[in-house]
Image (cartoon, rainbow, N blue to C red; front, side, top):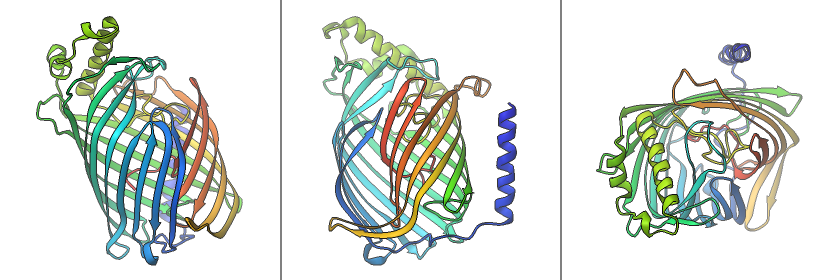
Length: 423
């Protein structure tokens, strides 16, 4: 409790300081430096999988603000997607993004149970396919991107192809599973009182997002819910070019209409076509379905907030490792900038300007629970270090290695951790 009060005092001080004297921008928040990337790159995110990412990105097209990208994933994922970003309907004020994609195959890890009292070896992998999704965002921004409001909407669908044990053993394979559909509508605010939109080293960011998830299946099995995510990140300059970063995040789910909670009805609806007696291990098949139904009923009753584990928060754990109705996170990261210079590079298929290289050292802790009374009673920790390459076009190439109560995880990904994904 004392630590939380101390942290609250620090963040309050930062809010007052930020409002009293907002730092000047180090760089233009609307860069027009043209860049492009056409390259294969490895990706690895425990809980999501690994493979090769073939990307094509044209940033600040013809020295405009607009970006275009296409990508193909091969490995645990077989997917393709494309998008047009930063399209200025009103210059430097009203910005439109839209994306779309197709998922031919994906392997999704689902840990059984909710909260921290779960076994890291008790998980199933779900093979899905026939997936597609579309989305768009419109953002209103003022004062050099310091004041921002946005609305985002997307829909996606996929079909279950099979469920497997952690060791790859097939549990069951539906003959003709229906497509699962979901939609999300997000709206929120971001106050960016920092010295740089893409690579802050001083100041404060505060965001408040409301994300409404609506099951698009007509059977009424899914809940209608929204999550409220609040994110505060403070940047303290250390020396001439390094930064000490502090982050506090919390998320809670609010269920406006419960999904189906009758176990027998839910089983008949979701798994009625599965005959466990015809599988290689009928007892294991029945146990798996029973565990999945328990998790589904908890999600239908309490809702599911933003989870823990993966590339952003609690990086020592796989993506989606912990889930529940309420989440609280505290993290700190020291970003040691080895270089602070603009170095253009052009290798025909890759053209950009390198602005800095960083080594990061970080410490994170988080709690998750179904109710507010239990939130904060139990915590998990993550400690590690990483390397980042930051470019003028806004790309951040990141490699993180973190260790926690369940071992070591390595993530190879783009963008900084703790960032608001809506932006």
